Length: 341
Ligand code: PAF
Image 1 (cartoon, rainbow, N blue to C red):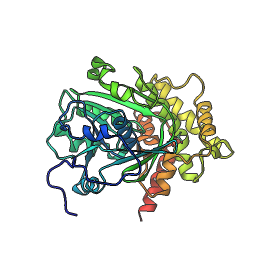
Image 2 (cartoon, protein in one colour; image 1 turned 45 degrees about the vertical axis):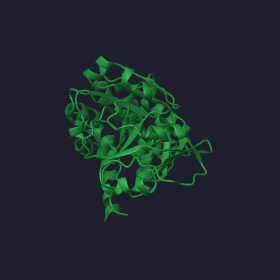
Image 3 (cartoon, rainbow, N blue to C red; image 1 turned 180 degrees about the vertical axis):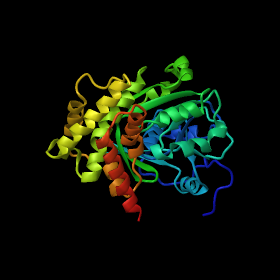
Image 4 (spheres, rainbow, N blue to C red; image 1 turned 120 degrees about the vertical axis):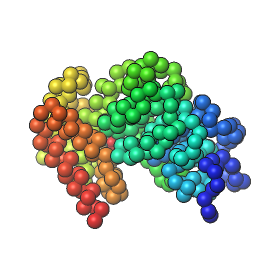
């Protein structure tokens, strides 16, 4: 099938459905994309698809931003998103638009992989103005700051989540593990507006809270990811394996360095030592494959540069040696590079 002319494929096709369809959601798709309530999703991977589905289930208009006409075409072939949760399947229909559309974006949820974020958001920059609310919900750190610098007049929020989800197809996501999400203001404009613009996100059937000190939540997640993800990737092991020697010693070294950097930045982490928190997460998720190990196994780029790489950049600015995080970052980067060959 050729590319769709125009930038929206809100047309629904006749399709025989065995799954549940909320007809209210189908009606919603007739609204114009410039509707100021519409959540535009930038990055419809596992996290983006999860939020798109839950927003649609809550009768919130959603528009998936598509990078290419081919991505848009895929929605013409199958205009539905499927959510699998608790043994049930739910279908709903988002609107779609190309990045290059000229429709203004009022509410933007950025769920790209960390290494894709800046290029993706720059591709829709012409659609963002001071009235746009931007929510960056992703792993790692660094991008939140860059987005806030790129759009100083827009309200920029950050989010961090422990929800577990994975995709089983381009339009299907499995909500595998219930977690918790925090959203909070990342710049002055967001601070001034407070939590009200995020109400639709906070009202979903996902446990989430508005958090004034979102920096600390981001750092907590970063610190845990620094301790667990890279190690599981280089040792090709499940999270629980890190509780055993010699991996545990490596995790202790990583945690010590993270704590040094955080302390120098006056950034609180946990009320107890980071290693205890990391061991707790490794135990609770013992059977899981970390997101980074999954990326490596699927020969995808990893987020190491926004996790241990971010920590190393902070440490360099503060002249703090962090050799273990440095070596780990290099080893994971090398692992991905080897797979590219
Ligand atoms: O990235 C991940 O996989 C998770 O955040 C965690 C908890 C570190 C490991 O499963």
